[in-house]
Image (cartoon, rainbow, N blue to C red; front, side, top):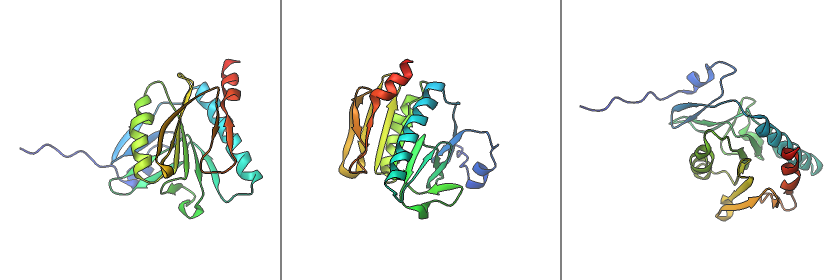
Length: 185
């Protein structure tokens, strides 16, 4: 006897979720997310501000978008993620509701309840669907793992004492000492 098929979530079902539902869809399966912590939001705000200031100063064509903002990586099976921070340089991917296709740069801030989502699951999806660069910021370990898929540089570890280059740009560096100091105060 064949096993019953799992229900595959459609875009219509996803869009019908309550407005305040925090959810992502991986290969047609909905995964609900917990609300972020204060530390998570502090890191997200600092990094978003730094990235946005850089893009504005350079008068670049890219857009910095913090969560929650959907990224549809695949239609069938449906795969939708909500990265903590993303940079999208091809504005044709933006339709007002979501980014359709891979952003150029993504940062995920690790939540203590599900670190494997960022280190394993999202690493796989982001690499598979064409994200150029993916950072995993882990406040508990005080580490940043840089994955620059465009140059096959994967899992380069840094500490919160590091100044880290954003590889998709020639002259953008982020000083994590400042973020670490914010978390200590």
